Length: 188
Picture 1 (tube, rainbow, N blue to C red):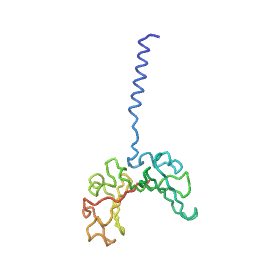
Picture 2 (cartoon, one colour):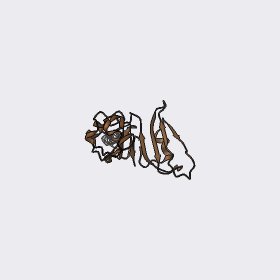
Picture 3 (spheres, rainbow, N blue to C red):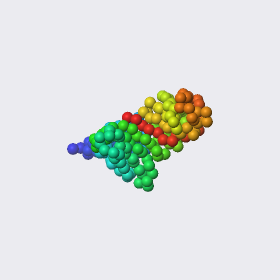
Picture 4 (cartoon, helix red, strand yellow):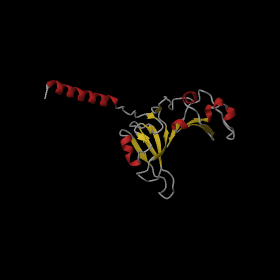
């Protein structure tokens, strides 16, 4: 075989290797999007949670027994004991069940538009189209269908005239820009 041809093949293979290595995008473990939170996806099974959270503690509590039909939440803590997430599986006591919803407490988890638990209502409305606002007893829930998420804001963040009447329809213009997010959830 000719030396130039060998050099050309080696160059082509090296280029292919470099391109394939640089084109692979590493998943951010704290990125929140419509179908995933870090390595956890909408199709991850309960039995595979250790792969999604290799350095964290996963706590499963069983409330009652398997006949109650209630979901048993799974809580994920960081290696230093910070509560990160609460996961609700689709089926109770089923290791093959997928996760239906995730409640996000940690400030390290952010949407692709950098909205996190450190954000305010202004950050939500500036980055996403608000689908609905629900008035609950102690909080309001702002739904964003674009990312299958809902953001909870404590009513203490609202003007006094909006805090106590659950029958009021609360509009986005009534919520102060500086109202802080208490936590947010992703629904699959």
